[in-house]
Image (tube, rainbow, N blue to C red; front, top):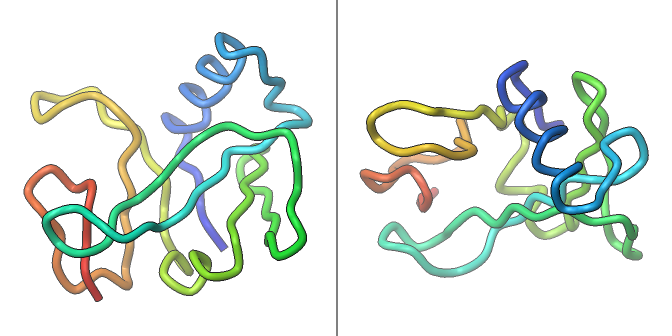
Length: 109
């Protein structure tokens, strides 16, 4: 399961609305792909369609959709939002990551 912080929830609702999505029925699609300075990188987008091998969760009134392969890397992750000096955007707090890069956008196990 993926947890969604209150800050991430508020920004997700706002950004989804700006992109023509409805947080009450559409999803945040979270995934992992090869790349980044640590080997794996996070992928986040909005979606309104469920695929065959997707897992769907709801936390803090936000629907999250994760493909089966990415789910193994993301179990227990918290999606947060940062507006600090190191940059603005969604932040993944992943307990499975052994190492992350300085910007926090890639990781390794």
